[in-house]
Image 1 (cartoon, helix red, strand yellow):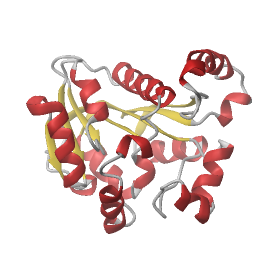
Image 2 (spheres, rainbow, N blue to C red):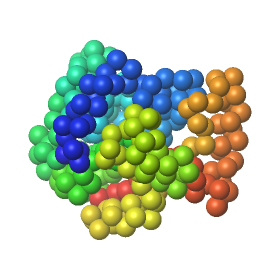
Image 3 (cartoon, rainbow, N blue to C red):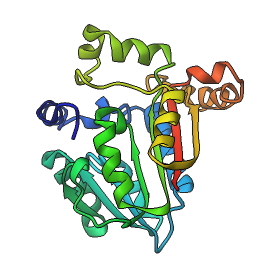
Length: 241
């Protein structure tokens, strides 16, 4: 479960009417960034007909809707019934939506070909969550997540200064990840082919007219060895050994 389940449920009710604003997908630049994350996850996880995929922390179904067109068999969970109801309204019957805790997944062992999510792991008790993720993932199955990068200066301040955290609408227990620590964690859980890459220099508050140029510049920044380390997000891929 999240580090404080009641706290997370309360936060979900607070953001219920404007969730994309809090998740940085409501602006033109934010939407571009979200679409890029969705496309990377689709490709990295190998979404295609016949593949069974679990989306963790689907929220209002913003990404579920984007994943649907792949033809994969999509299952999606969230702790909040209020957010999940919006996901059902958005996606209809094309997704198996379930209100449940990632720490107690209602699926058998080795059920999924892939487990994915966007900006969700930093809300979770990683040990408890990955016991279930590993259990329900097939041998050779993959994970693909996008998460905030603690090396990014803004994120480091936002996740570690309580006043700023409250101002930005974060829950008290939210965190972000260091690449090295996360790689070590996944290897200890039995994952192989672990790839964690910093990416994303397109800030969601960039004016829409400038977003394409900033995104193009960011693609070059992601290729510069030291500079890329402070990108806003981490792309996380690994295969269950």
